[in-house]
Length: 383
Image 1 (cartoon, rainbow, N blue to C red):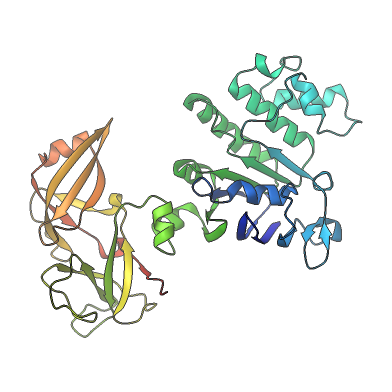
Image 2: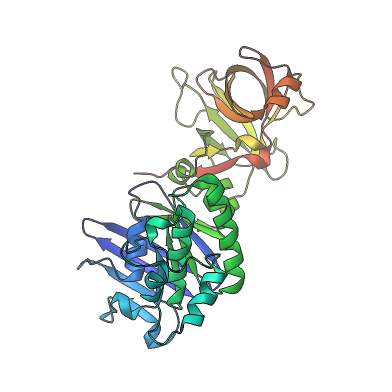
């Protein structure tokens, strides 16, 4: 089990806490400059910062503690059994593929070991080639073979798929999945690609400015972000403000009310119920929020129901104008404006077939239903 708890208050700010079990693939996900690579470098022992605090361990034995600022332990990179695949592979151009791999292996390893490793990585017959004689995908496989030749306790992957074309990337995704079936070690993948994290990772760590904001399975994090910043980082477009009111006698059991704020009407007070520029939604009351709390809330576009005629679902259904349709290949990005909240808009992706079935074009009137269970509510940070 890789366990990481790191804080750094120098020029490179870190406040990251996570773990990764053997056989698990954990993705560090965040925008450029969020600290993903710095965390990876700290785990590998490559981040030289006198202000680095915390602990990195891969087991319970003393030798498995790679870094412990309180205990005065700071093992050098060569003392950590880490396999690291760099973003641009870092292959030595003057060495052959097998010579690059051999640099990480024990000197006693025989030719047969490397032949078997190259066969396993789909590189059979390429041992004598230099990096410039290899394709991008082949270079990536050589870099991965070098990382595995070290017989690592942890495999670290720093955006390893960013430098290859789409077909090669798909093939490498498959090879990584196959590799995971035979190598039961913690794997940490750095990526800024939301789809890549969703496809490959068992869990994701959302990083921003060096801080781990949320850790969990991709589906859960993407559907239930912890706060507004996480919602923004995972690309949720339908993000709004409102006020939550807990269950009242007039509400159905287990339901509360969410007042969706538009532009505040003149004379409205912070605790007022909906004004002319507000819409009230029925939502699940999980009893985690104070009555009347200011909240932000999100809803995924794929969870919205859209129809050309008024829905039988009276709750959370309202008329909208289809303001814009942007074709994006097989799908179109559609923007809807609620008639009751002209200052707000929702976006969702619709296929060409769905648009045709709706008979919808810019300016059309459509009816939108927001299922109560699709609404995820987050408290607003105070201060």
